[in-house]
Length: 124
Image (cartoon, rainbow, N blue to C red; front, side):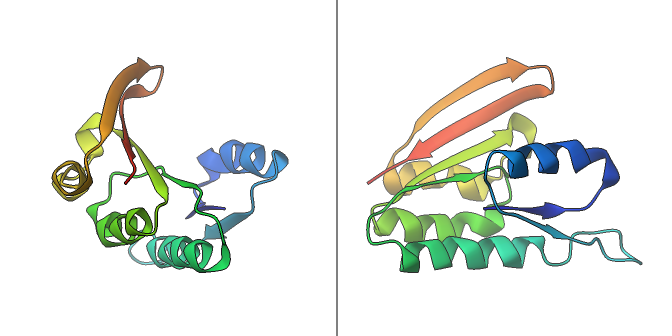
């Protein structure tokens, strides 16, 4: 499941994800604010639904540095899920970095055409 917003410049990314079998849930940005209104709520709902619906834990990959997902990542890890966080280095919140202390993590960074990224993998 991929949840995101509808900026036209990302249309090709969403199409590519859909073409490999991912369900893509796109949310409109707010007309006045231009901000993502339902993306975070939709993603949190999908995270918890996945935990409830699967008998065997899997791996969740979060493509965000938003610290608002920390509570949900912690809950998934407590249920024996693997959680990978991929984010631009300068966009990774302290809140998500705090999972290191709580659960331990393997971390790596790499440079790509789109900038420096940070990868964190958490497992119990």
